[in-house]
Length: 77
Image (cartoon, rainbow, N blue to C red; front, side, top):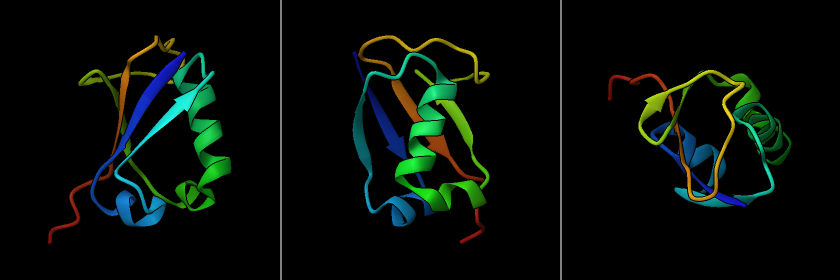
């Protein structure tokens, strides 16, 4: 099962990617843990997580083809 992760704003620079495809993550919580391991600096950033354009909680289950958006607060630039 693959989901698409889209980074916005300052997170693009931090991850050096605009989008990535991630396999085998069943929930937002497990995806977040995976992303923290792959991009350790995410631990120091605040951002909202949206799945298919909905603000969600970390227990939400993911389905194949979901789009997960990591959206930092507006930085004022």
